[in-house]
Length: 146
Image (cartoon, rainbow, N blue to C red; front, side, top):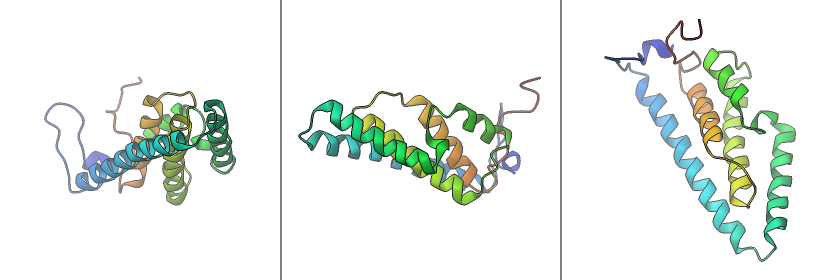
């Protein structure tokens, strides 16, 4: 359980799982940043009008979303489910969804589509936390929504 790994609040402590959780988040964030830059650089080398590049990126995102619908949209329901420990697809699906959200966001933003970066960062971070050992339980202290 993550509660044995990290204690939220003043005087927090880290258990033996903390380096795995931190390492997983670091890897996901580096991959996310580099993927967005890579797609942006590649898309702007294509000599098509900007609207065509954005449309192609949107079609590829739609294709990804057909197989992994969890990567579409801002992702707040997925983040909430991850925090509540209610995100029940298997570990393999969470791993694919993490990569899918990274690729879908990179394609959207890099090809010239419209969208933000904050919500996708939350989704990627929460999925990376689910992949890390023992991170499938809430990080917030109990009683916050009471």
